[in-house]
Length: 147
Image (tube, rainbow, N blue to C red; front, side, top):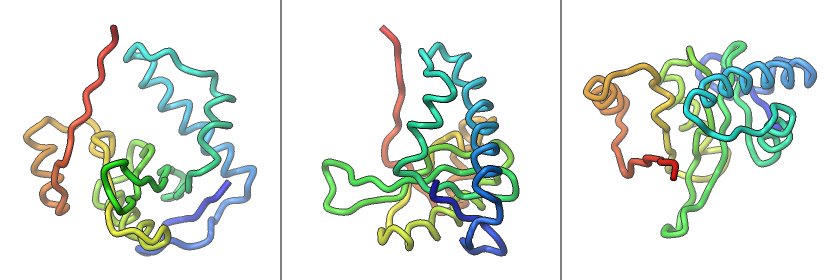
């Protein structure tokens, strides 16, 4: 498990032992699972989710909260970007953005993507203003449906 901590505005070696990291990740994924269950997704068991998410992701501990971060290269682009895979409730958006900017330098990219979950419980107009205040712009919006 590739993990770091966010301390004083920097990514530093993880402050938690591997067993504690896994325990906190499991708690985080359990909370996410509770949210996604309400949306009707057919969810994998928690153990499977743990196995699936660990490879290829960097986990950033902000106190005992976690952000999952990965790198991707969109099919239409010649450059990659850093993506937040999930953000624990309670990590402020400005911290999410700062972590992604720092993560981008680790991955050697200059772009980053922030999902709407990073600003959970915001109303649409307030969410737009919040994102604009952080210097973010909407490039695409993803909506999902079930047939």
